[in-house]
Image 1 (cartoon, one colour):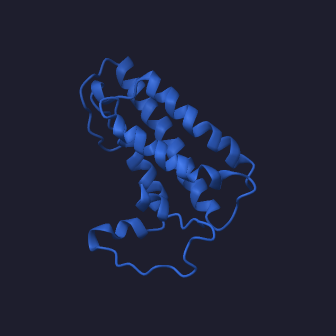
Image 2 (tube, one colour):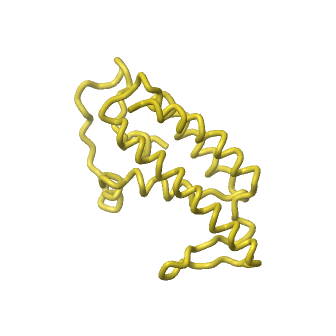
Image 3 (cartoon, helix red, strand yellow):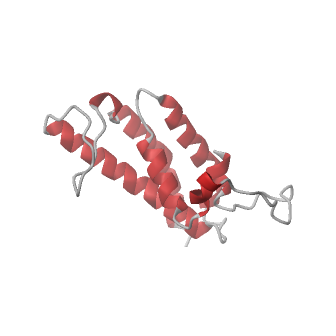
Length: 152
């Protein structure tokens, strides 16, 4: 949670150090510093969700709760564009995942499907997002989107 939220370089108030703290990044974690990290993090968070593993949903809730105040229209800064990309990707990946899972269920595909050349991957039925989980996600994300609409 800290690593994802700290990648947005958000101001933390008077208690935050004025100069950045120098830390070495281990080689396997350099992807966290890439400019497209917001898209990668959103993709990871959405495709980690499973009704059988509620910890992933709780983790996403915590991250979005930390970021909530930064979407308010009166709180804009250098972080705003990156957060907008992150929220847009969260929304896009969620919509894509739900659409693919529902299409697979309507077609009677209950097993896992690996993605291949334009065919989207679909998790097995027990890991697909149920309507309750989707409703919970919408309830979490929609207020941020509505707030963010007025930020620019």
